Length: 268
Ligand SMILES: C/C=C/C(=O)SCCNC(=O)CCNC(=O)[C@H](O)C(C)(C)COP(=O)(O)OP(=O)(O)OC[C@H]1O[C@@H](n2cnc3c(N)ncnc32)[C@H](O)[C@@H]1OP(=O)(O)O
Image (cartoon, rainbow, N blue to C red; front, side, top):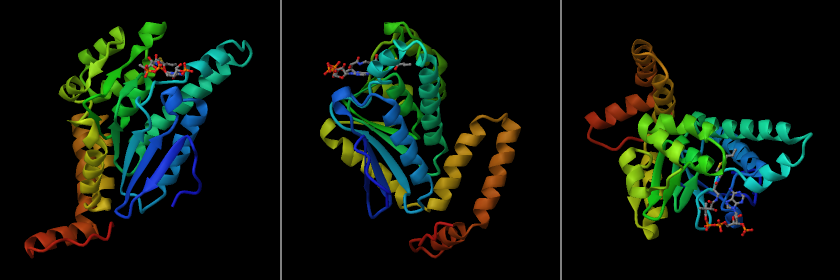
């Protein structure tokens, strides 16, 4: 399926249509170097075109999910007076592209969070459609600890959770434990560490048994309508529902229900 393996980002594809991507820079706590962001962008572009992929799980190697931007790389470019601004612009743009690509991906993306997710790492979890966390996971946006405000993480965070807890995280940089993150709505499920991967894959597997057509249509409509005024949101979703009702899988699903049998999806 994939056109090549990038050591920064491992890819495993299952027969059931679940693709697991693993951030693989544990020694740097999976921080988002320019190359890591490039690997993510490339993988997401590839997956978006791959009809065999029904659900994506985004995991990470080592004890930390993701420690945000690569602060060594940032420091190296800051010390380069000529190229610093250009690199920062390119890195922030690439990061924004990746986060938007997660939301725009036709397939749902589930974050599998085994440890700390900071700054852009927290932004990545917030950008995913669903998140399953280990009891050891923690979330924070600690830019303020190092003279920064996590402005770009604020975009995803403020869409994932309510404004006041989001601002508290952004203004204090405080670590939010997994149970609290679940209460805030940043993660769906919290499980013991030993059960994390199985739980994330089970959730992905459950979604993968549904009509891929309905799931893709639904994910896109969900995100689209959120940005619209109420009347336009209903207009958009009524049009999507009409298209959905005319699709083969809806005829099959409704027919199967009425005939008391299991549906056989055509994914169209
Ligand atoms: C525009 C940009 C905005 C932002 O991204 S702002 C926020 C940036 N991120 C952070 O401030 C988090 C920085 N990292 C940490 O606070 C800690 O790490 C963790 C809590 C995530 C994990 O702690 P632990 O497991 O004890 O690991 P460790 O000993 O601190 O780090 C292990 C190695 O990983 C490197 N590393 C960690 N985070 C980053 C990073 N964000 N960029 C580059 N390297 C990082 C360290 O330096 C060290 O390296 P070595 O083994 O050579 O000493």
